[in-house]
Length: 459
Image (cartoon, rainbow, N blue to C red):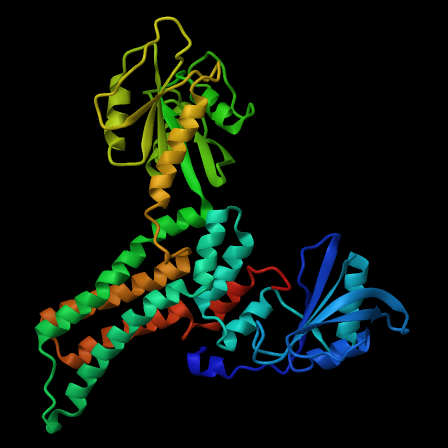
């Protein structure tokens, strides 16, 4: 186990090295060293005009093993503890030639450095107390972000937004534990046991913000993974044609025969910079065909799981009972009714008696598609606008909060049933351990390894 006290005193005897810029050729490539011998290992590889100084960039010529000049570089030295890892760090920014960077890496290894494992620089930052676990995870999220909104949320969490939200909650829990422990340990000194009603009230006050935080996971998942949008409706209403219009290429097969789509067809697109997974589904109807029936079941599952649903109707026909039942199931969810085939004779502008928004389109002619995109973006904006600064963005965080809430619920029930305080404290300590695991104050090595091996080498 790793605890916060031991983390703050962490210093490795190894000095690690890695290329910290992406693979391939570029204008600049950075080789990074971290550890007690970082400066000692780097200096023989460089011909410096001025000695390395903490926090200052120095011009240098890069030398090969024979002392010949290979390149020119800018070298920056960060002295412990004022660095990303809290160790001595040297960064050599040379030209981004893979051959040159590999040679630098080999020379650092020959001088005593060890090749870094994936995520080891950030892991050292965590173990030294420079970052907590939620901030370390935010580093990975920031690197992997594909939209500006994802980057903003990751940057906020890298700045400690989740930690700041958890800290006062954790302090409330510690205060409750301390008051109950005092009542048990110092009863002879006239310190009374906390009344059961007061214990229940304080536990409820701790549960409320944790419950709100747990609910943020659905939004955090959207931030991390993007939206999923299912296109549903009866056969031959133009679902696959609309899918192709939104994807902007012929991705799904379109024919005049009903029931062409028998399995889910998915494609990831970007709508105004927001990642969206579009899902084309089999037409909703009763079918005796086994393959089509399986496809229809998958369609219903996709509809229930999607963040947004487009219910496509035929503008030339009256709504079917299947359409009405589907629309009723979508009330209260982010969804749109799309009346397609507006270009055909006998089509008309349709209205819907329910609360769902209606958009008219012609997938064949491309009319109404810009309006449909705007309506989809409006729905997504409403969902995203509910996201607070601090949200849970991965399953590990959600599980830690869920474990804490479960333990608090057991403690509250025990207090209501007049269970001895010693037993209530067991549940409260379990909740505290879950919150410690959330920030990484107490986390098993297996979990740490799982988290940091997702990183790139050099990060």
